[in-house]
Length: 157
Image 1 (tube, rainbow, N blue to C red):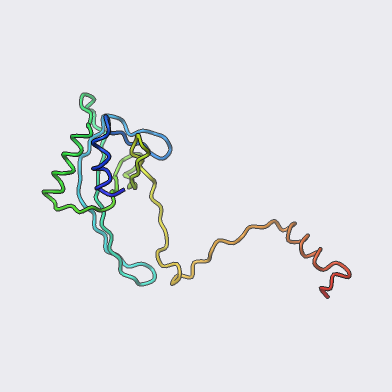
Image 2: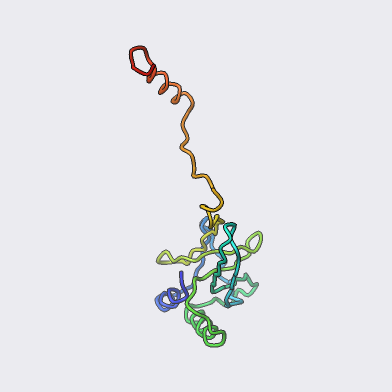
């Protein structure tokens, strides 16, 4: 989800809720303690130099049960960060501490913002000669197939 997407969604919400992919909700008394950008310049295992930019939201559970972040307030924080930090319309990455600090992609399911688990991948599969996944077949099936193909009078020999 890009920054422009969340800015279009927020005015239509009554509450801001974040949910992990496993169904657990971020406690409703969370705060957005940071909005900024992350820039990553790196080289992949194939030797290609890459550059990624993301807008970073940091969620924090406070012991402040009296205040709840409303959509208008979050929209104001986003607009202020855009003005003060010259933030562009990048993909959003969310930091949230569960057992450890996790980094998540962001989606919206029509009601809640979903913190999507990130995964690693090889960006240079051709250069690394990463094998494609092999088809799994039971050895008994392989034996039956070979046995049938070399039956007497089958023409295999």
